[in-house]
Image (cartoon, rainbow, N blue to C red; front, side):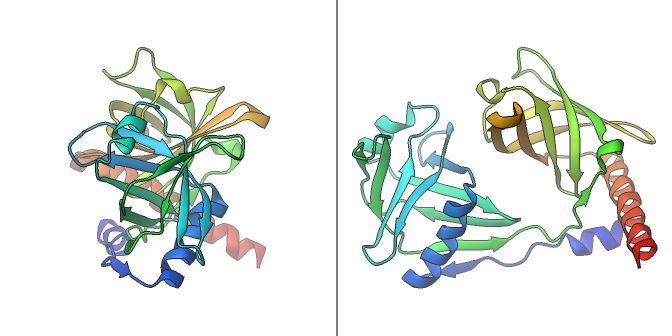
Length: 248
C-alpha cells in the first residue's frame, strides 16, 4: 500500500516555459481560476498573497492584485527582486520578477502592472490520488499551534498522501498566513486521531456561503502519521472504486 502511493506521488521534473504563447496560456489558467499567488522577496522571509488580475500577451503585460498584507508594496516599489508562485490543479507555476511594477488605480481598484515574465517554471508536483469525502462522512479537524491565538475547528473535504483541503465556518482569513507552518493540526480519522504540522498553501473566503476554504500540505510528517494518512487515502480510494463498480 505504502509503495503504491509513493510511486503515484512521485514528482515530475519541472519544465521551463520561454515562449510568450506558452507563458501567457499557463498564466491565464491562474487568472481565470482566480488561484491565489504567493509573493516572496529574495531577502525577506515574509510571504504576501496576491492574484493575477490582467494579462495581455500582445502587449507583453500582466497585472497583480493589491498585496496582502499591504507591507509588501513598499518592497515592490523599491525595486526589490521577488518571486511569484501559484498552484493550479496540482501544478506549480512560478516566475521571477521582470523589472519594476507600477501602481495602477485607473479601474477603481489597486493593482501592479509590469511586463510578462521571460520564463515560467511549470512543475507537476503531485500525482497522488486525491480522495474526496462524501458530505455525510466529513472528518472533523482542528487547526492549532503556537502561531495561532485560538484553535479553529473545521471539516476535511479531501485528502492525498501530501495534503488536504479544509472547510471552516465564517471568515478566518485574517487570522491565518499563507506559507505559515502550524504545528498542531488534528484530524479525527475513522481509526484514530492523527496529529501533524502543516503548511498553509491556499486560503479563500467564499462570502456567499460564509465559509473559508484552506489547502494545507503536510510538513515533516512522522512515519506513524504518514502510515495513518496513507491508510485513510487507500480506504477512500477503495470505497470510490467500489462505488464506481456499483454504478456500472
